[in-house]
Length: 171
Figure 1 (cartoon, rainbow, N blue to C red):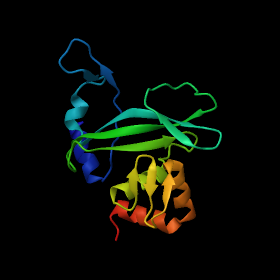
Figure 2 (cartoon, helix red, strand yellow; figure 1 turned 60 degrees about the vertical axis):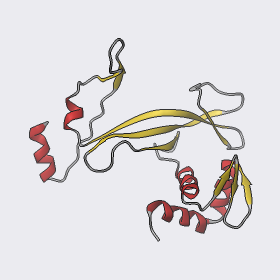
Figure 3 (cartoon, helix red, strand yellow; figure 1 turned 120 degrees about the vertical axis):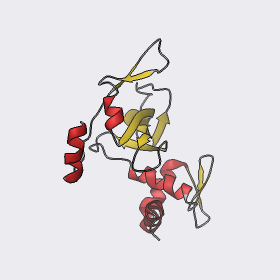
């Protein structure tokens, strides 16, 4: 790996290696990569992906999450995706030990749920105030639940653009 690092750096290429982690019992360190520890020392960036909850969709298209990791159907609901927690463990490029949550919807080709990310960005940048399951919009109007704020973003694309620009740091 050390010999190839210089080549990839000169050619402006990137190598992605996937290394599955397994549990090690009876040791101080509980997680051990199957390929050994060499990849950890050579890599410039190390990400850990962990499923935090499953997403279920009912007949009306409303999403709900289940943190019990129960993948079975709940009555008339179907599994619609997963919510991942991505943790930056090692980074030579930026600040380490940061984390984020993203949603992946099934049947979309592995795309992130962009509407959910925009809702979270709007809350983080104080464009929307959240109180329980209620969202207070900039107009003073209140909508209930995640699906209510999604509908508002679909009906008002200028608000979605403002949330996206706030998320990207564009003024």
